Length: 137
Image 1 (cartoon, rainbow, N blue to C red):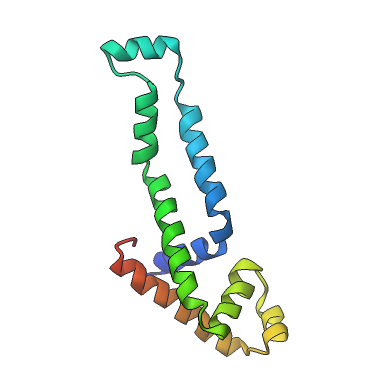
Image 2 (tube, rainbow, N blue to C red):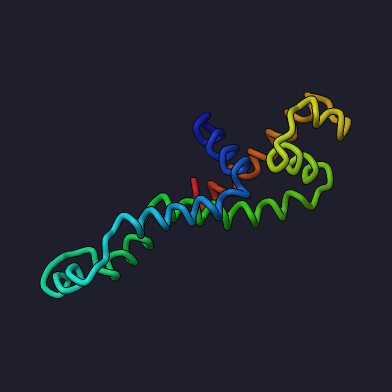
């Protein structure tokens, strides 16, 4: 696994709860970026313009928006699977959702730094393998 892939997975894990907000912001940016008015609708009859149809096409074809939505669905499924194990689920919750430091995790779960590192690698590798198989990466 390359370093940028590792960082990408960790980025999406840390920002998992913000993904719906990021998706909505991206959609708003695309919608606000195209000016749909009466004149553009009339021009759309004869030539290429910023019509409502073009706006819908931009929403469906935006690569960043597609990537965010795919990661959201993929991570939801994988986190449900990974969190079936109590220790892994607890670690994911503390590390990525509550954003606790290694020291705080050690105090709360009595998990050594070495064990935390092993669990983190297990989580990221598991997600990486399934993301590769799902052709998300």
